[in-house]
Length: 263
Image (cartoon, rainbow, N blue to C red):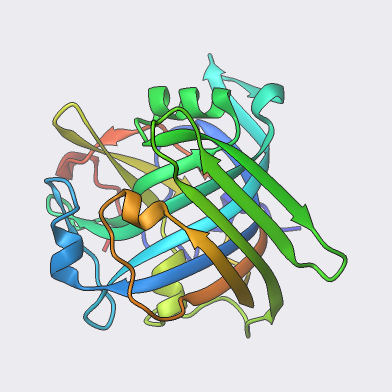
């Protein structure tokens, strides 16, 4: 079994300094992506970020999954399992951006819905991410089809997502740089605007074990709730069964924080 933290050859820059803050396992992920005009997406990004495009398009992704094995070093240096938020569904709406200060490429989240109140509170407090509490349901059929439903709570507006999806078999090895699947998934930081500053959270994981996928997305109100109009055609789909992820504390997006080895 590979040691995740010692496997770094695939990364675009070196591991962050210091110890990781949180560890999680992400399971049964569907990556559903649509191309969006760059100008339209640029208007939705905060100051300090610009669109990271592929083939002349910005890309917006809806990613349903569930996580478990959540651990944190929030109490001193001791690693603590989080039992009350150790297993829950999550659904995010994301795009891909580039820092105007450092050139660092990462994920920008418009929203992250989660079925754990503790996870929502913790992520908003520690990582300044736009988490929302949601009523979420997930069920896996014998043929591997996942039924997934989400309805956002406590916001005064109904934001729902309903889909069925399943894997169709592995791709031929890890995604290769320069391909669309690599662009959409191999990201090792996230951006979080807070208090007039742009913060960066570095993450680490092995290359995504992507598979082909099929999906029936019956209801998808997330993009419209955040000012995004999807094109009228089917999304690009990928599936991943599981991945262990490590997350570091946030840093301000400044050139002096740029890690050695970043290109």
